[in-house]
Image 1: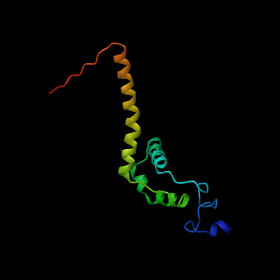
Image 2: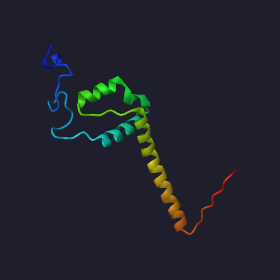
Image 3: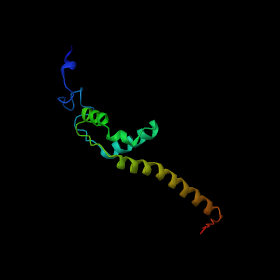
Image 4: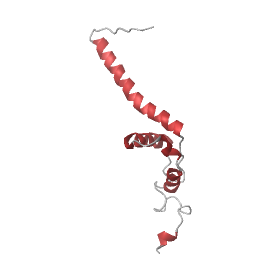
Length: 111
């Protein structure tokens, strides 16, 4: 059994190379983490419950003791923001181009 086999992941300190994934002096960026987590869940077609799993929370604590985990509700809002932000921006640009070309937009409402 080697030295690494005897070390508990809960006793590792940041910056040791064994348990600290971030560079010395680097601050945990919650906005970037939330964006990357949302992208990962989308790309891997994972469940929203992933963010509240004990396995992910343990992994986050091990890799970065300063990491803050998020809830399913926060993840859902972030995913909606990422997905819809691009969709609405694209639609806005298309409508602007349509109007700039002299065309009109007609809206109908069925009551």
